[in-house]
Image 1: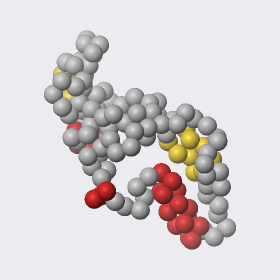
Image 2 (image 1 turned 120 degrees about the horizontal axis):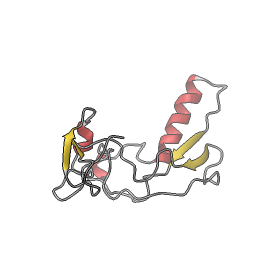
Image 3 (image 1 turned 120 degrees about the vertical axis):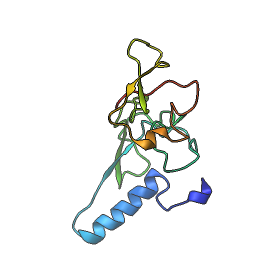
Length: 133
């Protein structure tokens, strides 16, 4: 992933960039941020930084807390979405009659091709289909 480096490569860098841009355009505004830590527990689990949907092996990050290592800018770490919940469906949803999710159901009307990336759960043979978010 080092070949795909950008200066907003993690949440704290992104906060710094956002705060700089926001205070430059609104000098009296002092923004504070909340970081979603529900799916950022494993570093470098993706082959491509663009593969955001249902990233395989993402892992749960910090538990929700207001104790941050950057209290001047970050008010809390929070699970904005339940860890393990689908970001979006695979091309086909799981058949509801199969609780394992391994049987192909109907085509997903809201399918986003990013949910079919090589890093997305359900893109490899033998993985379950992902339901709609």
